[in-house]
Image 1 (tube, one colour):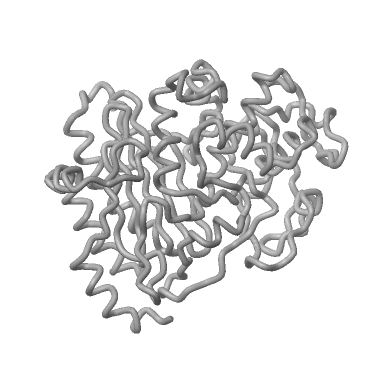
Image 2 (image 1 turned 90 degrees about the vertical axis):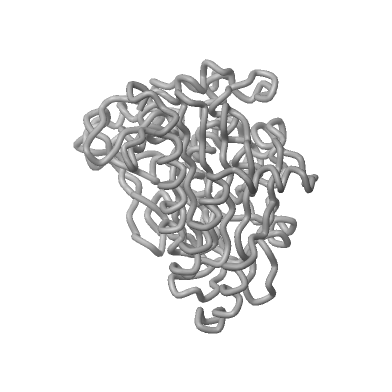
Length: 390
């Protein structure tokens, strides 16, 4: 459906906010909670900004979670999971989150180190059997898990485009060999490991292979059983299961036309589906690292290590282990952003104030939406922050 045909629906969207306020992770929304949260000035501002930015950028639906003092303060849903049917976004609507998949997958990779299946600083290539990094003028033995997760391993392939849902997926080894439709580039060394920061989705595909070889399990299955289920992330998956499809929002291109969902061989890099409720809870855990809530998935000390910068950094970027450092609007946060065709999302955590923002959208121009929401949140957050903590 063309965006012009959606005009009436967006007029309605301007007038109606499909609120999904929630305290913590409860699916039960009380009237008093809606009234309480709708009186929050930040809630009201994000509602206004979100609706306006969604209409301006042809993005039918948005889900927002704000974290305060280490806990989910409220969740807000704007607009439509599917514009044609008028199906609203809810706290349980499924979105693809693009490269935020890398941040979540890093928990699985770091779990391998806690299980002593690999160390952060041992060469990964000698331990692989299904595929190996090709020989190079650069030192392949310096490619380690620490460098892969921090984008300092010197590896190629920035990102992936995926395939339309319903098409056969290539094998992981085929992707590593460069048989992707988007760029046709194999994963290989393009500079000396450990000498500069260079974003590499290809590195996370290599880490996906590493996990499968070490555990003898599929990546998606391992993450489901060892990360998502113990954390209570019941609506999060690296696969488009039938349940996920049934609750998924429709993806929309830059003009507001519906497009088929994307599927990825490179699941660790780009293929995660989740809800605002699940991802907000994951964000909570990144901030509070509560041992009881972590349920032995990772030790708090491991998460703290992941949230520290890894050298070298560059003007192009700075990362921890899975977590990226960002400085939008003068506020230094950690987290990640994600873009795939029909989807855009952002997760921003400010550890000094134990605050956070998660925004999911079902449009290709959703980055303009989450950035508008982010500016409101950042302005509010900086007002409560000591300058020395920024």
